[in-house]
Length: 343
Ligand code: SAH
Image 1 (cartoon, rainbow, N blue to C red):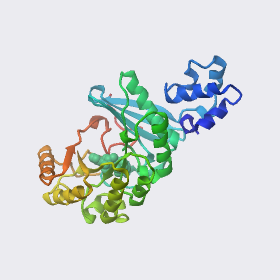
Image 2: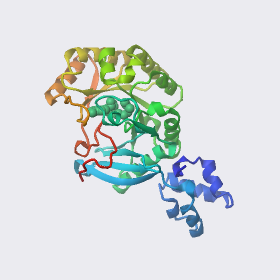
Image 3: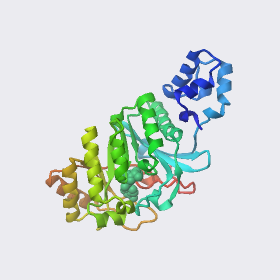
Image 4: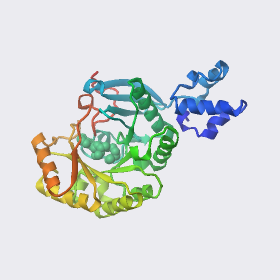
């Protein structure tokens, strides 16, 4: 249990002996001011002292290390959880918006060969409070720079749809209580088709990003093992359903790997799926990880692949790499405390 696990009623019960407005002030302190309970100035000193030692209000995360890159525009936290599991959270400031990339699990069971998190295996699901508190941390950090946190992407460590109920409760908390619009929340999934259908029925207009990487079953399964369980026909049908039910545009993520999925045939197979889904394609030049030897497609190769997709009428962008030198880029999150650091 941690402070952002509590429901409003549970927060109220901590101050049940006081007038109701005190628990409203505490809730406001947590969700609007993003304050430490002991620093909520409107509460009388004895109440704050009591809150400071309440175990239910303990933080879920301890910052073990903060590293920055891109002249301070990318910040990565290594966070230690109560049981010493570790996760990473990455905050990226862009000229007009700030986006936090949040972890949903400590480790990941999906074992995608080219992803550092997958290479390290699974430890456990994160709880609601552990997910929400990452956003609070990023929101506070944005505020100290005079910025506002605009977007939340569940693209950090873990497979969000494998931790479905905690991820959903956390998203509802972000939307209802932290004031982040559902349309500014993106769930990125390896492609768990039944969970995509379930998400479509939640009456929440979150964006869906699907990590495709291969547009035929053989290639995809060689990169993303879970594709054997949910082949493309099933995945694409679930995505179509998601688009129909929510009206949201889907994006397809594609890490470009030299000689593996950057051929002309890959572009045409990908284009067929993207057009069917009217999806946006996000190309990510592969970021290096310790357990995968292939390299990313060259910049010219990336441009050529992008141009082929454009020729097929597909809406495509190349994701600018952020935080590579601090292992904060896509697929590089591994949360090992001994990893080399840069500051
Ligand atoms: N499990 C979720 C979210 C985490 S990964 C998912 O699979 O979508 C976030 C994105 O980074 C995914 O699109 C993932 O495929 C991609 N990625 C993983 N390793 C990468 C690497 N080494 N280089 C570039 N992108 C990578």
